[in-house]
Amino acid sequence: MMYLYNTATHHKDEFKPQNEKQVTMYCCGPTVYNFAHIGNLRTYIFEDLLSRTIRLHYPLKHVMNITDVGHLVSDADSGEDKMEVGAAREGKSAWDIAKFYEQKFWQDYDALHCTRPTVISRATTHIQEMIALVKTLEEKGYTYRTSDGIYYDTSKFDRYDALVGHARIRGLQGGARVEMSDEKRNPTDFALWKFSPKDKKRQMEWDSPWGVGFPGWHIECSAMAMKYLGHTLDIHCGGIDHVTIHHTNEIAQSEAATGEKYVNYWVHGEFLILRSGKMSKSGGTFVTLDVLKEKGYEPLAYRYLCLGAHYRTQLEFSYESMDSATKSLKNLRTLACQAQDEAKGTPVQNEKVQAWKDKFTAAMEDDLNAPKALAVTWEAVRSCDLAAGEKLAFLAFADTILSLDLFKKQEAAACELPAEVAGLLKARAEARGAKDWKKSDELRDAIARLGYVVKDTPQGQQAEKK
Image (cartoon, rainbow, N blue to C red):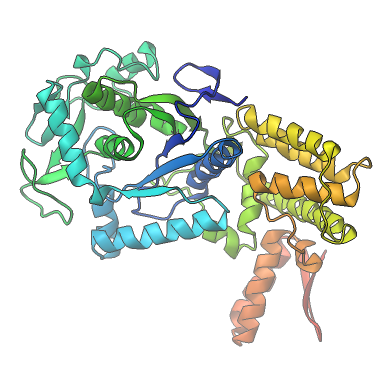
């Protein structure tokens, strides 16, 4: 049996799919106006763990949206569309911005060994579905018109507090994260369709029954999720920041339109934080996967770091923790490769191995307890009770969920150094190869500040602890 913490019920619920022949899961994807930061990517790692665990027992239809229009910079339905902001920032078209950042997102997604969704659904290719959903809500009396768009009247939906509770909705009505305009009937009302501004030409806009404009962010997910997965989804995932506004609004518009329950299990991942606070694009405090790679870290070392904390707990990021994750991953791979070599690549399946598999699976099925599953993996690989072939069989199974490339051979010399030092050393070698002696000296000084001395030898450069 699998248990998931359900945000809607506030406790772990036994997972019972509507149809055992196919589980349905929708995950909120990126808004492709900028690079995804590693905090965003932590969410996709936990969703990947969920999809891999579900697939142990059931076929899965996994849908992820790509928001390439309609996500405004403010939760209050004010400000510019993030795609238009990205286009202005870089002097490109909004369409080119979307294409570039989506491609970069998938590069990061793949580098972290996340399993691609069954369906990738882009907002700009589902405008008619969104218009149809808004028309249904209009016909049922849930909408009203203002000077800047068509809005959903949250007072008409008596379950608006279903996901977050009445007290938190009252907090929103008091002004937290939303603003009241002269034309809004209620502070929590939200835009379903926004009209294009008369004084500024938009790059992304469409004709609609209400005038030229573009969809609101919330309507996108409901329209696309229900198109591919039906009126009621088994699971809906996303970051914890989506609970109060985005997912609350999804429930309101979807259930008002269909009269049916929208989602059975809401599963949300917590923030990755810096010591200075939440990682944020708007605040300029974000680290990308490319930054980690430039510093010499392997993407899967970041995946290992994320596996060490439960998805519902905040994880503090630091380069010290990345060094520790890098070392642990290296050591785990070394033991895995030793087992593989000793077994001559021949796994041994028996009841003893199955017992370890069951122990690992039980951890993952207990609300995706990846830290416990990782601990089971370490326990198994160090066990004196398991022969090499038995360890090989267990590790091959565990890696179908962990996806850490456990049988990758390690380069001992590079891994003995902290990843940041190794990255600087690599950059220095490239500078020397290009005869950029000034940059080479600057990188030598940077390495020295980290406590290492660089020596140039006939075999190449080496770094040693001071």
